[in-house]
Length: 514
Image (tube, rainbow, N blue to C red):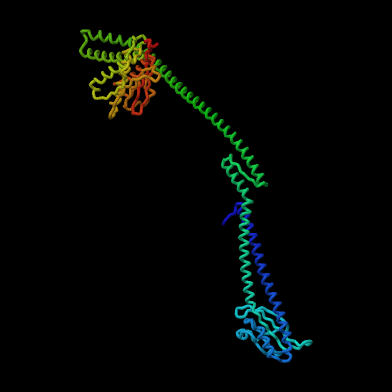
């Protein structure tokens, strides 16, 4: 179903319907009026003509002069081949018939009225007016006969039909002309409305610079000017809003950037704080453990020295039996083992007064790796090194640092071997820090990494057999690096191994770094 939503379509439809109804009613009324006037005129003329003929025929009826009646009838119908006349006497017997024979056979006999009457009938598909006129003697009611006239108005009916067709054509033309006029008028009337509608659509779509132009000098022109003023105000307002939004956006971005920077600084500070806290905790824990272990080592070392002395004295006596001498040697062996452990525990607290000097860290690591590789058990093991040719000078004790790097590299090699890692290797990388203030040593392996990495520097913590390792190597290394004012850390890397990172302060141009 078509929906007419625009004003133009509604106006056009309304005017077309109104004109259609008006023209249809007018046409029907005109056609009916013409037909009615035509029939009334024909009837009046026909009745007057029949009355005149009755006046002329009255003497012939009175004197029974039927020959004159017949000649009069034929004279009347001479130029009217479709008309007919019946003449009846007073007894309703047919005296004479003038006209087509087929009409006579169809209409005779007829019921004849006793006064002038007319009716419209159809004979052989042709329209006829039929009138019966009684012939009276003047001044008397005696009826001498009847005259029945039949008049064909087929020609006039055709003329009326042509007139009706012409009238219908004229009505259609008028309707078309009215339709064209309506379309033009409604277009003229609704064009300003369409312009206003288009302007509103442009404004609603965000085109606030759009302006409408109406030159009708009427209410629509006033609406157009008001619309332009409204659009201009909206444009100014939207420009101000956009400027405000832009400024607000810039402020939000700047504030967000400041918040991000503050957040990043806060995160860095928190990370540094956690790192510092962990470092302090580790340092204090190492100090406490070192102090405790050193105290125990000192207390154990004194009686252990006495035991070893008494064992030696008893072993050199001549009255000692071989069995007792064997037992004394076993006691001496275990006591020496304890003494060795005590000596290693003593290293947890390195001597700060040990001799220190400038050391070329590149040379130290190169010699150390060369010695480790030359060992029979490591000849087929891959150790990669990235050591620069330049001298990276640090200030420290050569023996202690050698001990630290040697123990860490040996631990990495043992981890790879114990886990049977295919393509196992250890990488030693020496470089400068980004601020070029520290020498950085990375010792990387793919030997499985640490399960409890937070306990890596705890004394006596080890994943190996107690008969093999005592779990103090990394603790000693931590304390030695701390004593050299450096940093050491352990992380599990993406090679399925561990990375030990050591920072040592580079000496400045003036030599020793305080």
